[in-house]
Image (tube, rainbow, N blue to C red; front, side, top):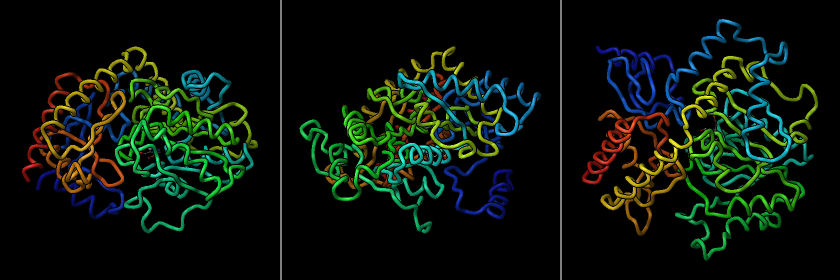
Length: 434
Ligand SMILES: Cc1ncc(COP(=O)(O)O)c(C=O)c1O
């Protein structure tokens, strides 16, 4: 029995089926954009552990910072004995996030926890309880974050009842417009629809915040039309509603800017970061206008591990790596190449209904028929399988599970990128003829 078969059996015996796995092999080591498994096989990584490894696996500066910190201390709990890396990182986050106003940042352990804390802060600061989220959104798996999430299976099914006071409207998803309209003649009706909700669902003066992703992540890398975010923000401002920008997946350089919302000319009241923030260590940030972040009373926010020193040091090293290695430019270059290749693939493969993205956040949506746009979910699953059989790790996305998204480390070499794209192209050919 191979080591992999051995481990697979142990996994089945010891770990519940709920925590899923996309590929059937086990990592032994990883560097840059390549993961080696326990059998010594090498895989090009187009998933980055779901968008966590923008600076690459085992980035030198990050590993050094973690090692150095591990030898000093690994935990004191910021609420018991404070430490410099937390404060230093907060200061850095306040500087690099968009918004020409005074900001403050607190740290937690995961994207979902950032979402939860942003909601607590927004409710406290406004004295209002309702939240508006979007169709096709993903905000995490804890009770409140799961409620804010849109996709039912697998994220919500069987886990109700959900948290109260959450309302939902369609996102600016032009390929599948909920109103059957077309941009630009629609004049971004989907954003104006928010005003309708104040009559049909919840009074504006009861709404604490609108929670939105700058570009949908799990929802299938949907890029809203130019002007969508600005309209939503204007409606929020006119009604005293906070605008929370969930950058957990789209942020930290993925789109060619440090924060995806910078593409859309909006300054959020609160910005959420996680995933690539700390290069693989569990860390998430809630950054917001100082007076909003300071609203909750002393002791009202926090957690034992939030802003762990190893993770804060790793995050500081990630930010340095971005600057030193010009990773924002690299994200743009990767994005151009991938977009170009995806468009060519679309000409050849009938199954590709839509190609979209910003910077290196690029995806293709697979459909059974370009006219009906019937989602090609099974084919997408098969594509992921064909890819890893040929040495490429990919992950799908989309409410209908029919989107192939690309989240490779931004340090991927040109030849690794070429090889990965060639595997994807070849695999698309195979699922078409399937
Ligand atoms: C936009 C967005 N928000 C929140 C989350 C939840 O993050 P975590 O899995 O770290 O809890 C995710 C995870 O994919 C995400 O993409």
